Image 1 (tube, rainbow, N blue to C red):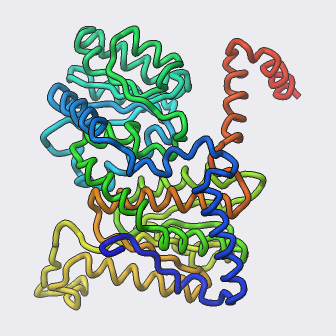
Image 2 (image 1 turned 120 degrees about the vertical axis):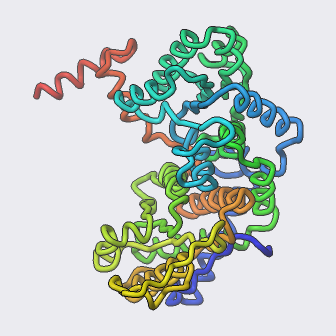
Image 3 (image 1 turned 30 degrees about the vertical axis):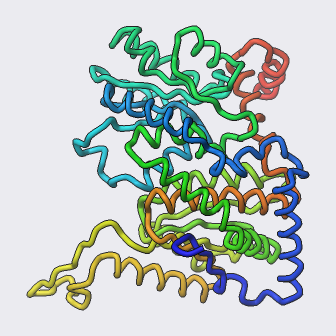
Length: 442
């Protein structure tokens, strides 16, 4: 596939024997077959697999119409959700945005996020920011009862109704939820909110290309058609690159590399890495197995985490997101006195220096025993970000099956919730509450 994401693994598994490579490829092909045939664990959550090519024009137009309404009536739009219900949209918006858009006067509303934590000061500050300004809400929850987004929605719904009146609130609150059931679906029906459906067969961390992600991304002013088209390209033509990544990371895991560090040299990719961490951590971390997903922002973190990566325990491998073209050019000027000693790069653009820092870092880390996988991204545009999203999603499904786990459930996530509900004296958790109190007293 020309003009697309490419995977380079020559700095990662150059010592892998031919027999081992053949065995891993056979394992990956079997995992790919399991995924595509729907014969594996979690097969009721495979709706994302052919999602890009199945999104119809009617749905795209509806999302664009809703986004246009919010953009015309609101100064801010608060997207309320947690985990996959916010990280995908946040990742795409950040990857495509002006770094300092929050401080500039631009056309259309600023998309803000809530319901992804239980920070009281965070919620207070956000409420203080939107007080006196027209704002809308996109509330994203399958059930409507998940603690973090439910608290945020209760607060901002009440605030919006008091501030702008109920008709404005009803028009500018959009619910993305279950098709038929749940507290949020019932409320949306009762209040007359516009709604979009979270498909039953798409888990949260795979939901970027559903209205969960597409609606906030469209409100932020980005081209969701180009995003979808990039994902379609990867769905239809990207299997070679997807398999390359899945095979390589599993080869490194089996050789004792237990931590994958996703590194970028482009500040816009910070939240893409956060989304990737949820995707792989929640999908693979089961049965006391799985590659631990971590991330770093270079060159910033070379002055902090760089020491650990270069000289720490050799259980790490790096996957480097390498971005090609930049949107702008900034030339380093010459200085007559040259007190900072930078005249040797005068006349060069800043990205040239960044690319040399990237190459120098890769070479140093490989020399230090840190294998490097490279994923090249031609540019940070909607098309290529769409490719990257689907690339990571399908590679995750294949990699999870290679590992021998169900990539599409998350049973461990419920443990903290049961304890929290018991400590908060939620009805139905009395027995566990008593057990916890006894434990704490002991």
